[in-house]
Length: 582
Image (tube, rainbow, N blue to C red; front, top):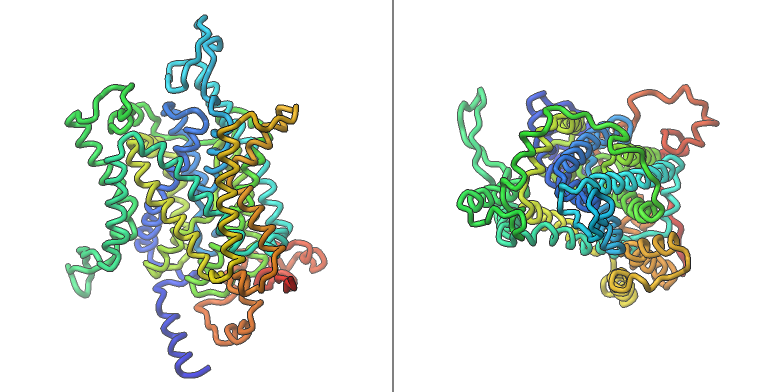
């Protein structure tokens, strides 16, 4: 290694204040852990709120509070397991936004899902009552039934998710899936999520755009500025230091600003106190009794909404989101390893991480969360800002999330957030999500007419077919109601149509691996891979991925059949990709 290479390596080593295996002082760990929690709260609230909406519990504050408590608890449990026995990188596991798309698809297929015949109550009138009337006794039963259907279907999807990781089957998928398949598939999710943003923002567009504008100002316009912060130390005493705090908490600052604006408009009665008014849910006191009525402590438990029900249509939709979530998580594993300056994750680490995510997805289903938990890329970015890669920080963050999930008042406070404030935060979050997905195209040859055609056809098809199902719900008629519903839910999901088309075209039309972007995602296929490995120096080695307990007591004959445990066969840098000859 040359002197220049050595200097570059030393600089990279010193770039991190704390590495993965380091243990920062307790006060540093606590502050950084709380920061990770605050970064993630807005996303968890958004996903949980939409689950409540999909379950016809939009105005049932008790159910919404219980859903959010369950979400926060599972965020903590999944993060704890991922750091201890999962891939063991500093990764936060939170509510997966990808699972919102299947819920939107289900809603579009059955627009009358939340309308209750009057005959189901004590009234004799046969008219239809909207679910917005919270006094209707059948509404709670309907919401509970919807959540139970989500729970049973999510549990089965989680079991499949776990099996894919535990058996190492994820390697087979990566043999045929590359950037040209992933980008249109996940991009369609980002586009489709605009429906959820609109649903919350439309109550007051002014507050929604003000919330988003503040978050954009903090994160983009002031991205090159550092905020002056008063600090004290024994060496310097009281002094000012500069830190990009506003950028790290941009979304939270924006939402607090929007909440304050809504409070002013509420106090001055600019937004009328009329439950039937379109802007009523923009008021801060629209659900003011929630905090007062909430219990101080609430312990979410499996089956809290009733026994899970398996619903074939919901399971089919969740299964699609599961496959996309797995691929997204693998990308996050590699990104985290890169930013922590450790070797790429071995096969056993990736398999174990996917298995833990699947196990916790099943547990989230049992809890009634209505969504899975998966790796959140935003928290990986915060490691690059703070320069602290210690997994002790994420262990502490998991404990904070568990405590938040058990304290009922915390969930109740966030449930009272005005709808347009939530919509403005979602606009920025999902907007950034879509932008990050598009960034994967940088490894693909955009000069190739083949690539452009595949991407364009996949996106248009992914938007066209769900629109057709939504506008002509009776177009599919097989004579079997169950089969009709499954087909409608599958075709209404843009991920399925766009993903299948892009995958088929990408693997059946002539192209080189470099043109497809495969060599960038799997450097072992490139010509310079071995040279890069020799010149690469890491802050820590493969011991980062070791389990906290020894597996030497397991016979090698057994160990080779357990791809989620370290062994000679499972220590490879990932999954070998075949050289396509088309």
